[in-house]
Length: 265
Ligand code: ZN
Ligand code: MN
Image 1 (cartoon, rainbow, N blue to C red):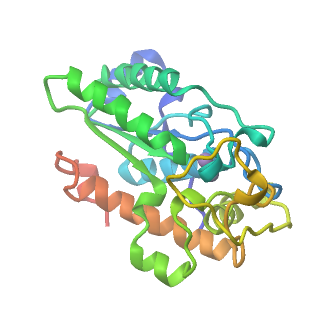
Image 2: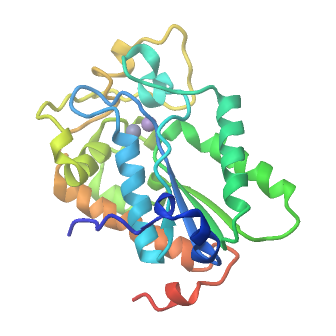
């Protein structure tokens, strides 16, 4: 089953209709990165994947999706290959926090009930959380509810053990089995046939300068791509969508499900 894109597009609304359209609704904002993903995947991997998850979640919530944010946190050697590979575009951490906080502040000025940020780029996570925390500290009330999730954080341990026995840690799943499989499912037109494998994935929590990208990656790929296929990507996609829906509507947030969410099967 292909994900049906196009929930409701926030940016396609006209200004006079915005207030009524989004009142008590959820906004879903995908945040990604333009970043090298090896020789077989495009720079847009973190955009394609974040946007696909965000649009599907928005459709299931009857929510509005924003366009994906393409430029975000710096790629690091142990989790994205770093800046040794051409094509990666980023902004500095302080700039990113300010950008995210300003954008979230603008969105929270709307009469929405929930803002959900769907992250697709490993290095974005602490900056997204910090920006949300800034906004939360400024506010007196509880609405809108603020939720941010990185898609990989919704993958169950049991699923990982069964499907990826040699799982190297999410920091090293860069251009590897999961991203290659998701891209083969979502945008096979952007994936080439080469499958570089890196058999010695870097450990997290270590920073060496200068970075030795010849040992931490194989041509920008940090882990194994062996076994990547569209079927695995499809299974992973719907596993994450299901868990995201459970998280958002199942009481992990503070708000009760909306009537539209409650009527979902
Ligand atoms: Zn990626
Ligand atoms: Mn990334």
